[in-house]
Length: 124
Image (cartoon, rainbow, N blue to C red; front, top):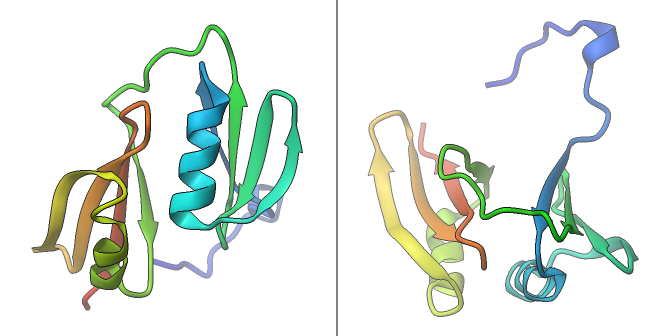
């Protein structure tokens, strides 16, 4: 879904997804060990991971609430079925790989707080 139309003032140079969590340790371990995303910056209450096309920033915040199920993140990967096989025994699976009518194959997991993460590979 790429477009050649850009407004120069709104072109994204870096995309950061920020998760506020009550306890940093289990989230850091989850994203670092399960996905093997490299740490690009860390401090006493946070860590930033390079996902390959965006930065995931996890920040400890005592006021953080459980994530809303009205939002989730979707991540395109080269081979969703191989990724599922490598993750299925390490994470909470919400649903296993399925072929979707809109042209991709996807599966969904949750992070330590139950935040839903969908991985997909386009099939068209």
